[in-house]
Image (tube, rainbow, N blue to C red; front, side, top):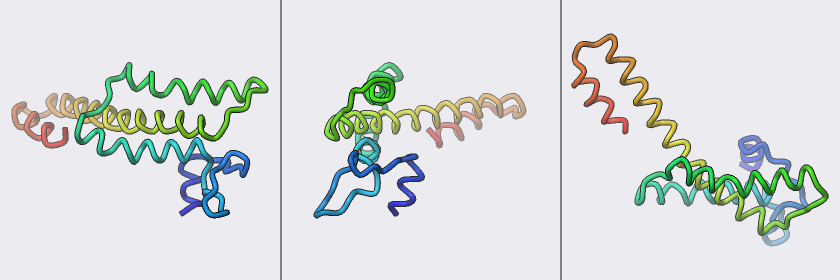
Length: 131
């Protein structure tokens, strides 16, 4: 499972940037652990409250992007707690992006199908099943 997580997140899994549990290193770094936790927490949030709007998604993603680039371009080194929190926020936003992208694709596909099918109401009913 750890190998799959490292591949899925593109994680470096550096020991100095990872959490440990009972002396064993997590399979992914603190930031990726935060992203995973955010994605898992985002599922019930979206089910109960709906997905975030685009401006909120962007605001939730900015901290991780800024922290990552700040570390890349300067001598600044954030701690694992900050990496986890920024990854968690990013993970929450990522779930919303997936839902938003899904909805946009379904809407676009329905409009495309309407060009070829006369019964637009049937297409709308089918579209609504996927939204």
